[in-house]
Length: 241
Image (cartoon, rainbow, N blue to C red; front, side, top):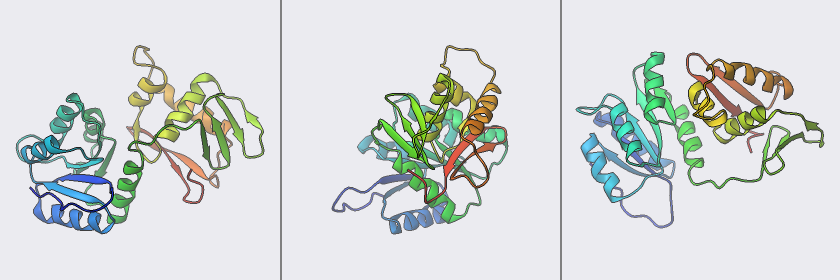
């Protein structure tokens, strides 16, 4: 277990929970080079000790840990009120394993072997989401979303008519862009946890939303279908709000 030395000025803090010493140290070095404050733990008891001392913006959590696995650990932390973002790392690639990660409370899931650039991009996306106050106006790819008036318009001012559910779905995708969103999580957030809806309903609404936005392969955004999981909204680098 290591704690980083104190440094001047606030920096995003990350806790790496990984039992493989080489991977743990390699991740630590690369993230510190990117300007993050990084602590590491080789097991869940070590991680528990660090989490009792302070909060972290992001946990990078290996699934295959000795003793308590990453799924159980994440689930336990969420039940205890953990607010940090969680990125799970694992060699497991089956859809049910990925779903288990999201159901345990992770925001993202990356399979090994992974490319360093992809991991760093996902870390940046998750850290950006921490503590960001909601705005009344959101812009993306030539569109403007007015949360107060619940209106969507093009850059030239032309309004696009959306149903209540379509508007809520768009806002949810925008607020969680770059993250894989399971269908059930979308349903709970947009339709409500007390409403019984077929998960495939999300597919129809995403399809209708893309049509109303006039999506093509040259648009400045895309809503990726993640087979067996759900959807992920991404922006082109020059159009990301």
